[in-house]
Length: 203
Image 1: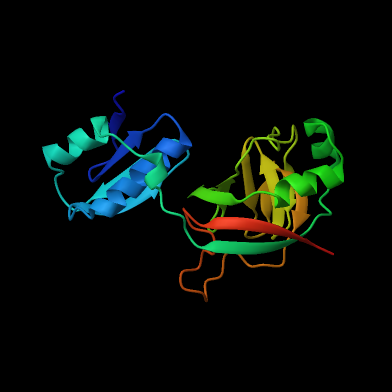
Image 2: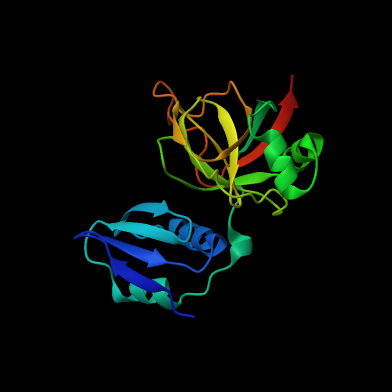
């Protein structure tokens, strides 16, 4: 099936993919090619934004539209352990939504490896996808005006860690003292696309 390409300003192209996995596979394939005309790649939920150094060759455009991708070729990134106190304000509500208790939510959350699919919303905020969909929950009907930094939260099929205090509508299940955004660190973002994450329950 053909992927749709959209012009994105004067120097970029947005490639629309059907799934997050396809977007990750396209991003990985382009990074492995190391084409000199690609200046930057920005993966999204179902897209990859390509910033060009100059005009793209027709061969590369054809690959973007029709090239076959191998999801199995997406390389595993570094593993990061995130210690979490599971005392979030929405923990019991999440448990009710998925048909278990708080202990069941913690077990499901810590019992799988999560992968950063893409980043957005705020600097250092990674959208993590898990190995199963048992913790799929809707956003809150009423967003909070302030979510504390370090809050671990769920929304739709994603998990995220708020890098700083900000408004937000995700379901809060816990918190971590681990800094996911630090301007004194190189790079500042701890969670980058491809990174794998294991959550560890602490008291």
